[in-house]
Structures are given as structure tokens and as C-alpha cells.
Amino acid sequence: MTGAQLSAFQANSGIAPAAMAAMLVGAVFSALLVWGVWAIRTAYVGWAEDRLSQRQFLGVVVRFLAMYLVLTFFLLS
Image 1: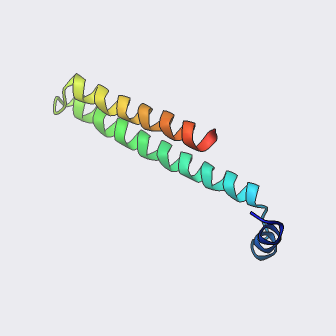
Image 2: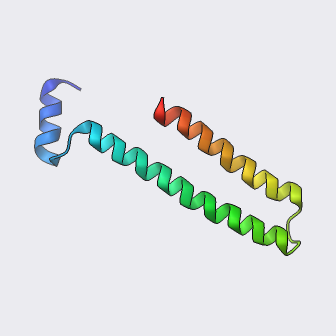
Image 3: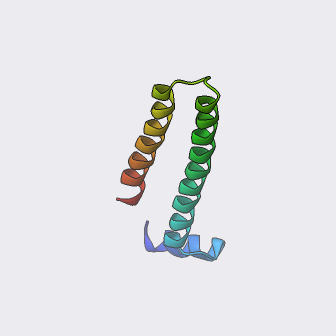
């Protein structure tokens, strides 16, 4: 961003662009963690009630971990 764009952003929002970026990254990670807890808990209940196999349950966990690692790499690097 140019200097004029930075000053316009800060004048209109009252927040520095770096602080806004940190807030958005935090919101993405918190939403991902809430979704991950919901998905893993739902899969666990299905596995405990014999509606999912252990392999399917582990698939949910591995997919969540892969998504978390990919987002961590892209958003925090």
C-alpha cells in the first residue's frame, strides 16, 4: 500500500492495517478451531455409537489437522 492508502485506511477505520490483519487471521483460526472441535466431536460420537469405523474417524481427524497445517503455513508465513 502507498502512504496515502495507509493514511486513508487508518483515518477511516481508526485501526492500523497490521492490527486489522492480525484480527482477521485470529478470526480465521478461531473459526477453524471451533469447526474442528465440532467435527471431531461429532465423528467421535459416531464412532462411539458404531456408526463410523475407526478409519473414518481418523480420516476426519487427519483432514482437520491437514487443513490446520495448510492454513498455518499460508496465513502465518
